Length: 295
Image 1: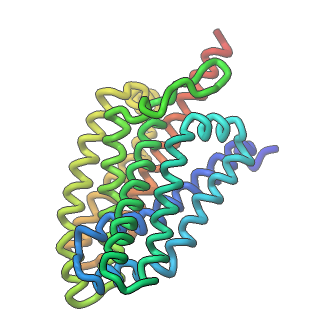
Image 2 (image 1 turned 120 degrees about the vertical axis):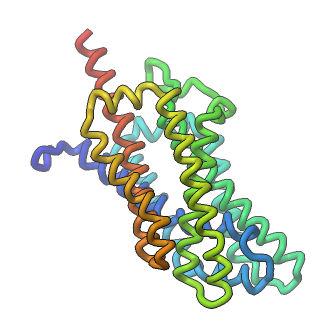
Image 3 (image 1 turned 180 degrees about the horizontal axis):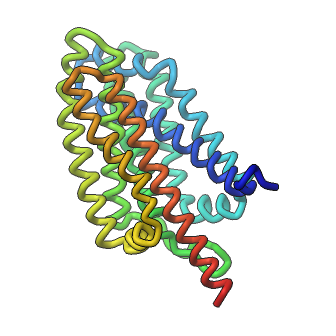
């Protein structure tokens, strides 16, 4: 079955990509708020404002992840089986972090004890930071390459997934989510609280751009198949250039006090990162399969 010039596999690939991109953009600012929860503010009422800012949307945003996983299982069961078996421990750690974060959000206000609230504040921050790091590590391994045997089964180990490139991608993702969440909080707060959050935005932008530049250099030096893909398909720059422009526009809009436009630029940058991450591996895999078939 085809839809115009697209076959059904391509349509499903785009759909799965849209779902996971929607999750990264929407739950990204939730996780970013959690990363900042212990760093940016210290009083109980300030932390309550942080949680209230994401209270109406955080659980709905996670539906994108569930739907994306279901779509991956329905459309590409072999990929689903390989990824979820190979990343089993990593996915269990991510699931535990997301659950602990959700429990912390719901339980924090159930008791007025300062120790009780401090414990769940720590759980919220730890769960959010750990989730962001593990999502980045997973994406880093996808870009780096996953060791598979001839039957498509994962041949690595959990510790093997924690190589320097994947961890660098994880740190970049934490910085990206923290920046994304800080911009979101500026939109959702006012007065002294907004001024406090705004002071964090520019340092987080610098941290993200620094991590992104280092990650790009590491990719060019140590992930040669990505460089080869850009050399073979120059139109890939049509994906990267708008993404770089979106990243460059974030500090510009923040300094103009137009945080909504900065938030949209952050969303566009995240969508561009997801698109570039998804497209290069599938093109390389297709080429490799074609070469094996014609050998």
